[in-house]
Length: 240
Image 1 (cartoon, one colour):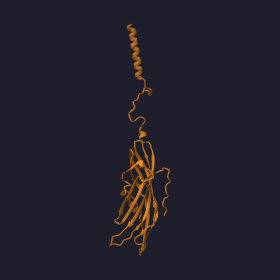
Image 2 (cartoon, one colour):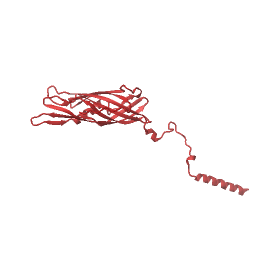
Image 3 (tube, one colour):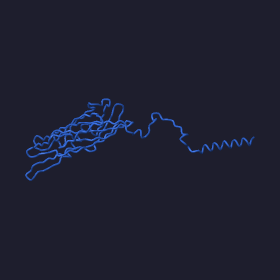
């Protein structure tokens, strides 16, 4: 009887040892889901969600003035417009990112303060681009547009002198004026908020501002952000 019990105990011990040495398999795995994370993964948090497209028609006016007791000359473009197109993607965790482009869509003829001795011309235009970041919480979308490359007008200013004409390229001046104006208007390098429930054919937010360069060149601008269909065609770029 004792021998029979001993054999039975040995068999039970072998079964237990065999089970402990078996490799772990998915069939034996039991998981407990964490609340609010069921069905999510690291990839889900950063996966693409809804895409939205917006545009801004930004109209600018430029004036140049001299001190009352000083005669001066300078080139300027009375009116010109930039068109901004941005495409944003909202991830499942509410983060927003995207990019956009800026083109010059029209420009009036360049003028100078001393037309008898100087002239100017818009010879070309260059496009720009920007990055977009932000966050959506409920119906509020906070966006920041960061300039990567500023668009410019290539304004060539020619002044007559007895010894020969002096020609100057104002491209970098216009790049600085355009960028700083957009900053002053609260469009670039500054967070702004939108109510997504009001996105439609009317402006979701308006921008306007003024920037004076070099003490005598003042550029003003205004425009509104409007969400548009994603497949809306881009307008043509201005061709001088």
